[in-house]
Length: 254
Length: 254
View: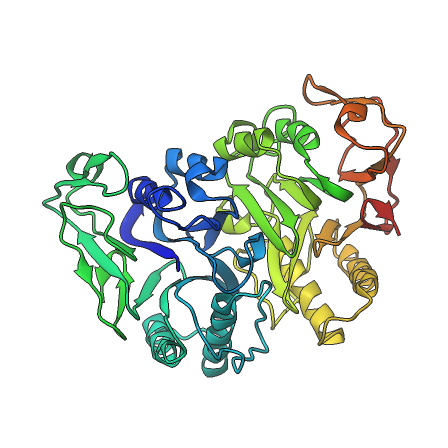
């Protein structure tokens, strides 16, 4: 299995605090040592840092932890491989272009009988069930929406509907973003928290680290963090239900 | 204008030495301060580091310079923007998936009357002439080769042929790779050097740095470096001619 981390915010926000917690699970406090990746959106563009090395000892992860890249939409993943060997092409997140937009995805779980998923338009580069499911999702979306619709929320709701089909094939916890919307889909393990004024302190579970969001934010900031398991032990995380999806834009659940 | 850097090698090789020279041109010894990027292939996977910040003061560039990522195919670019503003989505290299392979591209030059390039399959995310030309190239390749041909060299020769059409629209110096082949196409400014035994010393033009390749290599290594302008002052770089292309595989011109 793997761990997911996502963020949606109404102002460009760094994810160093949450990422620091996640990293420890990549071979130190958790067994997810088969690579990690993180995608930041800045405007329509995005950039991904990824490494097949365990995150807790990765030089690149150290940079990402120390260098605050500010973004309104982030997706991250640390991997404990099951389907597909440990290598760069099997490392999440995955990104493809659709209608001139970068779409990014990461998956936690394991699918069975997925060989009937035969995407034509988008093709997997690696050999994970995860990337195959992503290509299938995008194929279906492109089929239904040959042009980019003005109502992008409907695209993400359609992606959630398609995710029900994937959930029938096994465990499908998933994050999907176009840089504006962030979709979280739950099969069995996904939590989120929306932070807004009045802000308080938070303590990481996996590292000896406390942050006072009061000092880091302005009163209008709204930031949602999504994670497989709660990252802090003194905040109230919302546990998602099997088959539930949550769609965020600018930090707010919509 | 911009500067290009490419590498093709028969063993995974780091590009720290050449990249150190290129970086200085990103706002220090050269005016190319509008962002930079570099893509490394490792197997079928690739990873890109990019930054809209000037390369000579970029934190991420410092990491890439210090952390030897070994690869057989690399493409890098530093930008002095003309078409399209300075932002992440306009920062080269650009990558798209075709037949389940990652194809990466970077362009130096400027095109005019390019609005008749109307790719359908692949669409630009940013608004540069460069990315539009890349999408057009991929559209044409996908049209001619709906399936991945066994002879990939023919695909790159076709890309060179298409590049003649783009050269009619202005200056089109370009690097293109699938991680196995590296194509260099020249309009007016592109050089390459193939290093093989007996190896010697080389001195960077843009930084106070000498390397003795004898100490870094084994006798069977073959490494070609492609650059807009020669990066070293004590080696013989091959100047490419207008309309000339060079296709490399495992360091060798083929």
